[in-house]
Image (cartoon, rainbow, N blue to C red; front, side):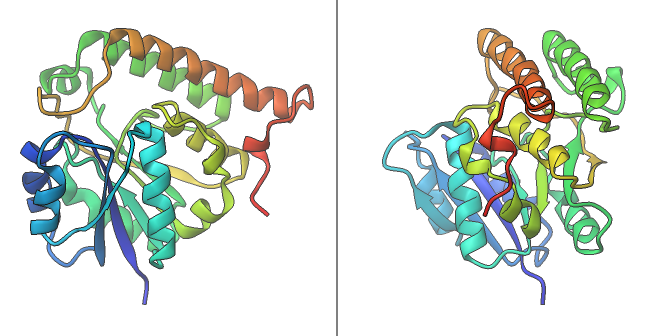
Length: 246
């Protein structure tokens, strides 16, 4: 029997956690794991009241560092499919069963939620103009550079098979936001099949989001990640990030 686990990298998500979970169809997953990255609000207490498996970091490890804890625990608990769902209500949890079915039926190895079906919908959903433009530009570059056809490379709603998590050396990735890009580039490097499913755009004050300066840093590191993989392929530089786990 296949086992599906949702992981939630959490930071100050008390105001949105319960509503996010209410959108997750009952019985669609076997377990929900929340990893708290030193929240200053009541996220941990609420998660425990809601019956989630809760892990607390002793210190703030960052967005990428939080994901590493999520994936380690999900693999230890026997997950065949792992879905990362932010607890900040930015992504609609009703699509989670669809993503799980697509992976279990061997249609893809990696799935992302695609928030950008049209410019109008993205902006009406509250996505800042500069983020929309940056998302479109980077996604276009990444698709061309990596030979993919994803609607969006920068979604925080993601689902992976166990094989993906056991193959990619994601432990070597950044503890910051560029972890997500590094993970996808690794998936391409190792030949995993990627796809996406449509999800509505939700930008609100409760949803976590990086500011303009950190967005610029993220964009620069995204481009460096693409170049790093190319340098590795052409043997001009060897990176352990593109060597499969033993």
